[in-house]
Image: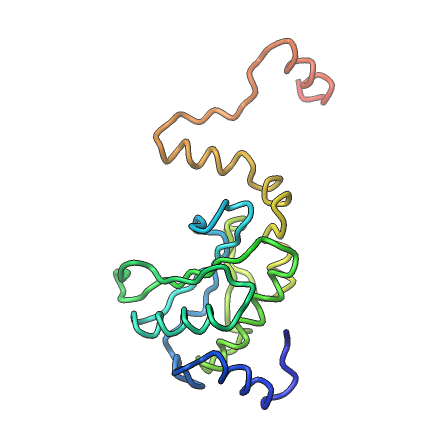
Length: 193
């Protein structure tokens, strides 16, 4: 939902802010958006996208969580980290269904948040589980870097998620296929012997 004029935007924001006004979060929201770097608490990671970013101060973080939960029907849950990070910041988590319009929904939400922070979306960076690099935060980059369906997630991270859990549990990870007649014939057919 892109807003065509300021009057429409102001009306939309006034319906969901309840206490937050333009520039209330100025210099409080860090300009890095992380996607799928945390585990979902509302469902399976293959079904739920976890969006996160840092905010200075518990009360502003709580206000922003309230803003997000009341303002966007596509949000399953929004929450803040249970404790303060070393630098006095809190992490805001937003969870939503993994579906094709996630990219547009996230950008629309951030455009609305920009009215509260006096920031520009063009100054924000996107970091995802699937990339070690920072990217410009655009709907196109989200679509390119974030699996938008459960099937896409399984294809991209299928065994990685299980391997990560095994590693965290201290279990030896061996994702190589065993050597037997069947796997050797597959390797031969694939030309990788």
